Length: 402
Image 1 (cartoon, helix red, strand yellow):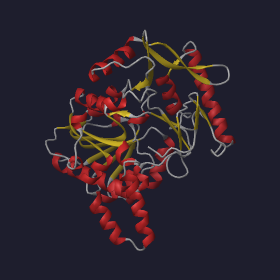
Image 2: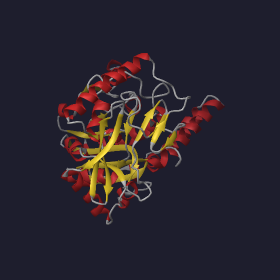
Image 3: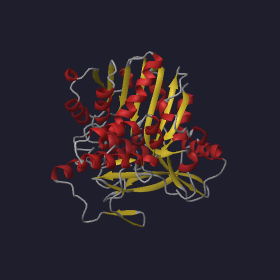
Image 4: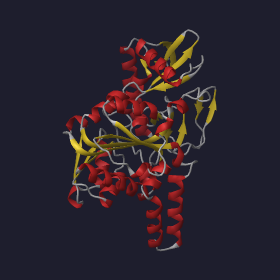
C-alpha cells in the first residue's frame, strides 16, 4: 500500500488539505463527465446504487473510469507506486519463482493480469524469458504504456496483449496478478440491531453520499458465512466489505490453468484479521497523487478506490475452483524464499558508487520492512497439478493462519 500522505478526518469525511495537488481543467471536465454518467446510473436504479456497482463504474466505465481513461496512475507522476516500480529486485524474485514452476510442469507460458506500467513484465522477461508472455489488460492507456516499455521485437519472449481471460486457451504455466484483486469491486455493509444493511450511493443534489438500506439475501448470506467461519458475530455498528465476484473471478482464471500456479500479490490479511473488532470501519482506501484517504466520492475518475484482500476468501475461492492452496506468506518472507538477499548482494557488488548502494538499500527497505510493504502485502499461490514445493514459501508459510 502506498504511504499515506497528509489528510484530515472529520466526522467520517475527508477535508482535502491545501497542499494537495488540484486537478487541472481537463481532469476536472473528465471527472464531471463520469459524475454525469454515474448520476444516470443511479437514476436508472431508482435513486440508489450498490457500492459495488458504483466502484465498478468509477474504475472501469469505458472511456470514463479511472482504469479506462488516460491519466497517469503509476510512478512518481501518478497516484501510487507498486513494488515492481520500486526495484527490479521484486521482479527478479518473482521470475525465480516462475522459472521453478514452469520447469516442474513443463510449461512455457506466463500470463499477467493487469500489468500496470509493465515494470514487472519487463523484469521477468529480462531475467527469465518464457517462451510466451501474455498480458491481460482492460485499460487502453495502460496497454499503450506497457507496449512502449516492452517492444515484442526487442525481447526474447513472444509477448502479446489480450482483453480478458476468455481469449486464453488452457495452458501449463503461471498466472500472476500484482495488486489486481484489491481493485475488484466490493459491497459495503453495516451490522444493525435488526440484521445487515447494505451501504449504497445516492446523489443528494450536490454530491454523492452513502446511505444504507436493508441488504438483499445474497449479501446477508455472505456476511453470515463470514461470521460462521470466524465463530463469532459482528457487533451492531460494524462496517466492512465483501467481494461478491471474487469466486467467479478466480474460477474463470482457474479454468485456463491445466498445470501450474496462480500467484496473487496484494495488501491484505486473513479473515480473522480483516474483520477484527478494531477494524470496524472496513478497509476501503483511495489513492490520489500519493495521498491515501477514505473518501470514495472525492474526484470521481481521478483517484483509485481499493479495499484490502481477505486472503481466507481468496483461498476458499481457489479451492472451490479445484485448485490447491500451496503457499501464503508476507511479501518479505516470499522475497526471502526467492533469494532477494543473494540478488541484493550481487547488485550491491556491481554498484558503481556509494549513491547506488544507498539507492539499493532504500529499495530493499521499502520492499521488506514491516512498516512498508514487507508485512502489509501478502502472497498466495494456488496450484493445479503441481506437487512440488514453491521456493517463495520455503522461508515461512502462513497457510495455517487462514
